[in-house]
Length: 264
Image (tube, rainbow, N blue to C red; front, side, top):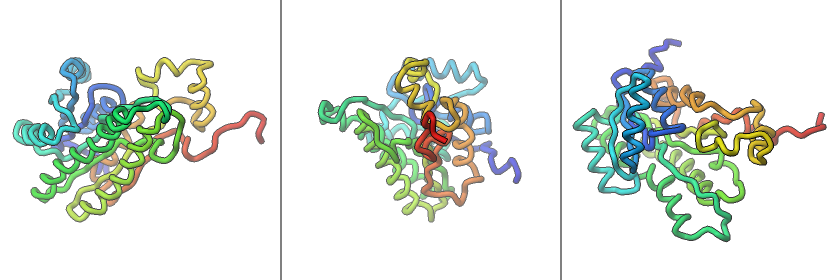
């Protein structure tokens, strides 16, 4: 198999919320494979700091300040990106939030905010980018950041799980509608990764760290850079006949009920 299948030179990739964490890791991987990188966020400070981090890695990133849940802003800024950089060939719907609140204590406003950012945002972004892909007849790649919560439930993350479950099915329906135009729409479902956000719970003795270690056959948290291969595959010609698929990168967690002490 030729490495040219994974070559992204000449492609423009937009990674929403690509200012930190898994989004930055994915954007870095795409850049190192040749793609021109565009990121957005709703915080100018985060964009400025991220630009410095990318530059330190030798990556010249384009930054735009807009909200993925704002239809008018999305249309305006995608148009700007198309004119100032290039039409988007690869869209990674990474922007998202989580609110850990038991269902009986969660307000409707908080529930709807998570759904808006994690599910409606990818709908708005994908619809706008797909219009250009269809009109130009160039095809393209859309990658939705799903989750293991697209498959499993867990206490206190009802809104997030509902959004990610919806995003899984939205991915499949986008594929059903847009595959004929040469657009591949797939998802990545990350397991638990070692990021700055998870640092407080990645310590010996913490109940959630114990849960992750006992449930993950790899017996460790993932490194954010380990998402790059999946993203590069789904963004490249190597995946031209892969559509509506969710690729779980979870160290095998979804494959097993987990380890049990004393069990043979």
